[in-house]
Amino acid sequence: MSFEVILGAWVATGLTLFILTFLYQDNPLFKLAEHLYVGISVGYAIVKTYDTVVIRLIYEPMVKQGDWWLLIPLAIGALMLTRYVPKAAWMSRIAFAFVVGVGSGLAIPRVISSYILKQIEDTVRPLAFLATDGSTTFTYSLLNPASNLNAIVLLIGVVSVLFYFFFSVEHTGPGKAVARTGIIFLMIAFGAAFGYTVMARMSLLIGRLTDLIEYAQPQYGRATWWLLAITIATLIVFHARRKGTEPPQ
Amino acid sequence: MTFLRRQLPLLITLVTGLLFAAQYYIPHPSSELMLTSVSKWLQIIGGFALILGVTSLFHIHAVKIRRKEPGWGYSFVLYAGMIGTIVIGLWHGGKETTDGVTTAFGWIYTFMMVPLQGTMFAILAFFIASAAYRSFRARSREAAVLLIAAIIVMMGRVPLGEHLIPISGDITQWILNVLNASVRRAILIGVSLGAVALSLKIIFGVERAYLGGGKE
Image 1 (cartoon, rainbow over the protein chains, first blue to last red):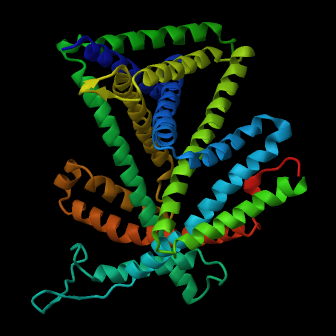
Image 2 (cartoon, rainbow over the protein chains, first blue to last red):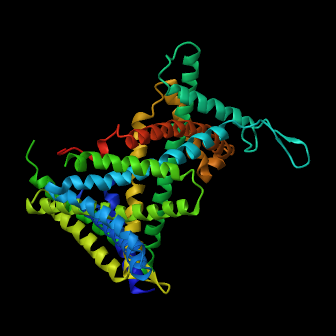
């Protein structure tokens, strides 16, 4: 195994353990890893942006293909930097106006088409389809994805939730029943989203623990065990030092 | 001068907004070319926005170091991480691998960024579980519904859950694909209507908060 991989295993194990120490309490090891994470992430974003924007979108089209129109977005972008010059800061408004104007213009027809009309169309579906042999497809089992009874459930859910958020009509009488149905649908969706998120995070945790177990193998120099011992010892030292400097109760 | 400071930005928003809203309804190659070009332009302008953000981060930590505020040493760690990654990344032309061999930039990504990011998000599982323990008491019928839905989905997402309750996988899929989808759809329709209304307000100059305050 190469030196780079073994060194990488030690670094990855150390950083993973440093972050996990936050489960005990906030401590200098966690803060160190946290600040390193921010620094590396920003550095990575800068390098990737340089490669994508400066090299591929500006340098290559302008120098190799002679696309000098790109001077316009460069000028607009440069206007953003005028925020650092108080007397010229108003010029940055021109850049923001361009970005916001283009974004708003692009959003209107696309949002109406994709997120409003298409969603309404998919909410109102027939209960049965014609199969290729001429028969109709229909099943009462809601758990069957092909069941078109689910179309009714979807319709009830969408209408009741929309009604719950519609405050121009007082939620009394039949309206109260519809709004309450909306609340039940919302609670189920929030519960499902919560359960889904927890399991996604658990999946990430399992991934990290798998790496820690792998890096505890002899070919990696038992990095996990050594670094775990060092981390615990460091935490004990920090705890003892802080206890010594704390004022008496 | 007031025209340049106040009216010109509003005019630019109006013209560009109407132009790109109309672009959607013009199926012509030059219209498509205009859309492709402006998408690249927005990416380029976004690069300048990154400069603003990074400069702000640099400034905040420089002030911390200069004033020797508590934890100022960590700002050096942040600087070291950022500058080190930039230098190594630019040295390798922003490439993680060259001819199938991992570069130093790729090494930073694989052995530093991925573990840090993964662990940072993984510890959220503990905090979510802790928050759930405190808040997930079935005090009302609605809270009970939320609790049951969460438990079913959690059971249905792991092999052990499906082993204990075989139908939990199917019910989870039904909850996610039908009940959850209906709520997401309703919220999406509501949010979209709001987005369209806000876009119209911006284009016609009713909403001006994006221009910021300061002198007229």
